Structure formats: C-alpha cells, structure tokens
Amino acid sequence: MIAKVDQTRLLATLQRDWDSEVQSERFRDICAGKERGHRIADYAEERTVYFIRHDAFPVAFEHGPDRVPRDRSMGDIWLMSGSPRIYNPINVKAGIAGVGGQPNMVSLEKLTQAILNHLIDSYWLLLLRFEINDSGALAGIKLVNILDYLAFMHFDAGPGQIMLRSDRFYAYLAGGGAAQLLDLADAVERLVALRRNGDERLTANREKRRLALEAKAETFDPTLPIDQGLALLSAPVTEA
Image 1 (tube, rainbow, N blue to C red):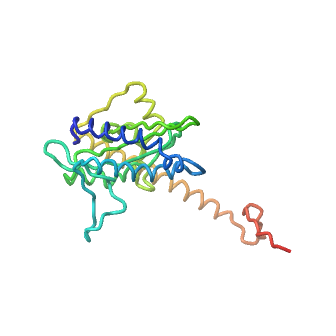
Image 2 (spheres, rainbow, N blue to C red):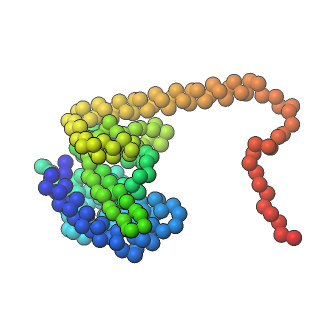
Image 3 (cartoon, rainbow, N blue to C red):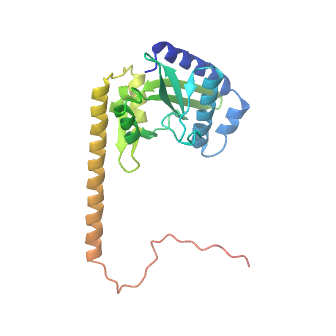
C-alpha cells in the first residue's frame, strides 16, 4: 500500500508541477488541433513520470527478462511505500474534464494474478483531469486504489480490460462519496466475479451472433446477382 504521508506528498508535488505545466507554451501546443485527448494522455503520462522522478521519490520500472524496460507495464511507475515497504504500481490516466466514456484501466487477468501471486496488495490510479477553456487550463489530480472503487469498474472480456465508468465515478466523488474499503480476500472475490460475469456475457453475445449468422446462411440464395449498393465504396477522382 502507499502510505498516507506518501500519498499526500505525491499529490502536493504533482499539483504544484502541473499548475505550472498547464501554463506553458508546450501544454498549449499539445491542446491545439484535433485529437487532443489522445495527445494529452501520452504527454501527461510522460510528464507525470518525469515530475515524480525529478522530485526523488523512490521508484522502479518493470523490465523484461532482457532487463530492458517494458513499453507496456501494469504500472507506468512503481512507488516504494507502505509497511512493509514495497513497490506499488501506479497507472497514470489523463483526460479532459467533461468527456465521459469508459477508459481502460488495467488487464483484469494481470491484476488478479499479481494479487494471487502476492506481488502487490493494491493497484493505484493517478487520474489527471484537465479543464480547458479560452482563459487557460486547470489540472485536477486524484490518487485512488482501484480495489476501493470496484463498484465503478466494468469488465469487457473481449479485450480483457477493466474500464472505469468515469461519469458515475466522478459524480460519486463530487457528491462526497468515500472509498469502499475491502480486504484483499474480498477484493479478489470481487475481481473473480467481474471476470465470471464478463466471460458469461461474452459467451452469450457470441452465441447470439452465431445463431443469427446460421439463420441468415440458411436463407442464402447464391443465384442472386451481386449488389454493391450497401458497400459504401467511392472511386478516386481522376484528373483529366
């Protein structure tokens, strides 16, 4: 776990640094143009990790068997804290305030296996939300243990990811909602239930699509002419 004193220091450090960063020309350039949400997400992850390292927090990064840091890890950065002191995975997630959706948080399989294998006892989300308007930008930062907010997580068995129901989650926090503390045994039970429910829904949906395909195949008439009216094709314009 990340100790309260370290949580407080981390949030204070990042709030200070991001209050300065959102005033920079670099941040304004990132926010310009289309698809700024994706650009901000990558940029915010990189800068946040830089801020944490620059302030000399005790951190580590996951690497592969060849000792090369992994491009995709459970944690963008692992912070040493707690009693006993262990490295705790922190996943940085950034977005623009007011934009809803269900962003991916972490692989359910990896998270559950890491707990069952006694590698971790918590999994932290560092959530940055930027309010951007004509007068400037503000950064809001929250650090939460995903195991305390499983009621706001959804599992999609297709990609295998836990996703945050962001609108409900932030509305809950804005209303003064508190963390729903679970011991590790209860958390594992909830994670397994998420997996079971997601797998059952995926199986049911695939069966439904298969049956629909079989029904359509039974009425297929191979003698009918080809009709490309629904193909949405367009040929390139040739110059004279």
